Every structure is written in C-alpha cells, then in structure tokens.
Figure 1 (tube, helix red, strand yellow):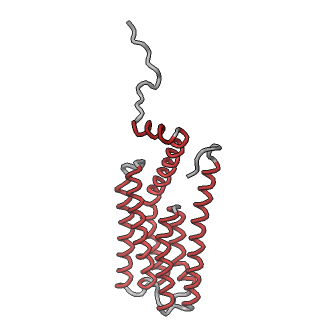
Figure 2: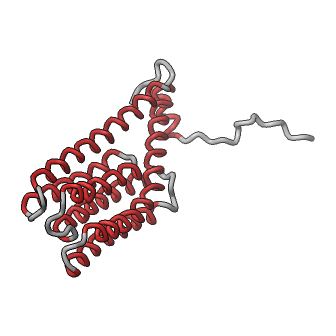
Figure 3: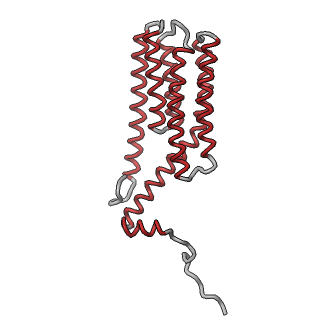
Length: 227
C-alpha cells in the first residue's frame, strides 16, 4: 500500500526560538528583526571580504610613501616599515580567522571587533610615519598626500564608517602634530590642510552610510518597522 503523501513543508523544522519570537513579537516584528539581522550579516561579510585588500594595500602605500617622500634615514624608515607590516599582518590575521565561516553572525561580530582594533593600530602606525618616514622640509603637498591617500584608500576599500574613522583619527592627529613640531615647509598650512581633508573624508563616509541606510528603509514595505 502506497504511503500517504506528505505536505511539502512537513519535514522542515522551525526552531523553538523562532516560534517563540513570532508569538511574543508578532510576525511583522519578527520579520523586521530577521531583515535587520540579514542586513548586518551582509554588511559584515562584505567588510570581511574587503579587509584583505586593505591588508595588501597598506604596505604598498607605505613603500610608495618612502619612495616619494625621501625618508629620514634607514633606521627610522625600517622602524616605520615594521609598524606598518605588523598592522597589515594583524588585519590579514583577523581576515583569516573569520573567512572559513563568512556568514556566521557570531563569527562576523567577533571579526568586526578585531578589525576595529586592527585599523586603530594601523592608523597610529601610519601616523607615526609623519615622524619616521617624511623627510625634513616636506612640503604641504607631500604631507597632504601622505595623510590623504591612505585614508581615502581605506575609506574606498572598507566602506564601513567605524573602521574608517578609527583609522582616520590617529592619522590626522599624528600627521598634523608632526607638521607643528617638525621642520616641515609651511608646517602650519600643512597641518590645516590635513585636518580639513580628514574632516571631508569623515563627513563623506558618514553621509554615504546615512544615504545607504535611508535607501534601505525606503525600500521596506509600508508598515514595516524601521531599524
């Protein structure tokens, strides 16, 4: 005798937490929460994928900076190269620890904390180059390129507000401070230009993120709870 046909979804188990959330929150609120979790997972997964590019790009930019700025001597340049290499390796290590589970929210959240710490250190490491890598008498254009190129590059690569700002802040602070205390040509002007450019990059990153969030909210159905 033939076995009675089963409903199409009969073998799909729905976890108790999901059923409980539907009961306590209501189906629309549960769907909204799941949507926001999916958005967060996608954002962090994209950040994970782009972080390796940042790890590769930092030492390349450092080499270009030494080549164009002239350096302050072999010991100082070597010390700065070590700082940047450690920053690059730390970002690569954070990437390697999470890439095997790129869509697990717990893993991605741990990666987000790691990458924040890594880029903060990378910002201090790069900013130290204003003392260790820029030659005496560096022009405002040279100083502006030294601070502006990596911060803009990190902003383009990572495209995530917090890591970009964590990298930007120490770079801007240390570079502008070096302009004041070192014998750069027109140091005050260079410091002002660095701070202005850094503020523009920070504002651009914040505005782009707000615009993207507004577009996501606008695409939601009417009555769908906002994040």
